[in-house]
Length: 89
Image (cartoon, rainbow, N blue to C red; front, side, top):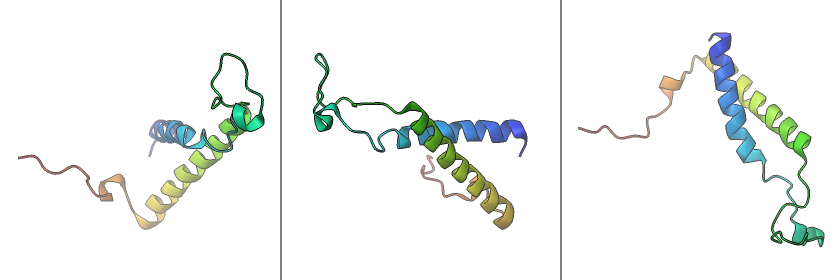
């Protein structure tokens, strides 16, 4: 795999992982008993930007390098994954 392909795959993995990591550890304003006027009680109390970015980067890197190891060592590729769409005739 070229470095451009690897970078593109990592970027996609990172972006998908970001949305999986965003809800981890979020405390609402209602849980903190500090509701800002004009916001809903379920709004986040504090957003930890660097924590989310770091966790996303670590998880995405683990998935990326794990897939590279498995595909290189065992010879798996994306074409070995099952197809979920039925054949349309």
